[in-house]
Length: 100
Image 1 (cartoon, rainbow, N blue to C red):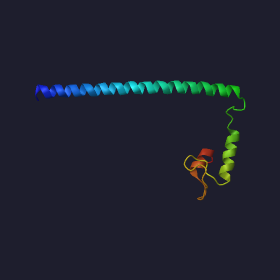
Image 2: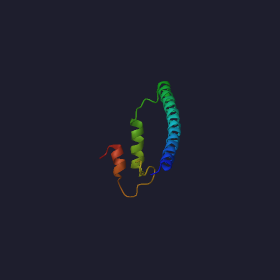
Image 3: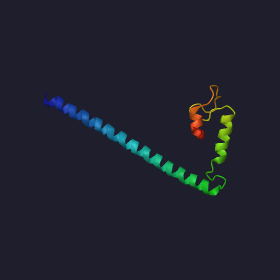
Image 4: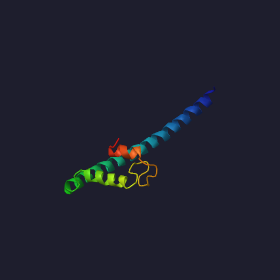
């Protein structure tokens, strides 16, 4: 391997490293934006939960509603949510409701 081709390889590698460094900087900036947005949303969620006493985290009514929907013949699982159950019981739905 001659010196000129070795120098060209090193120069190319240096250029690629520079491009990766720029890309890394861009990714870091995107991560910072996402972290700030996440913190803002967490603060907003906390504020909303404190300001509205009806949102107490009580899921019993939600659970009853989902059970009623399932008993009406519809899927409540993430796989087929909202579609009509035509093949009898669904193990995903039953597991979600704690019936298995």
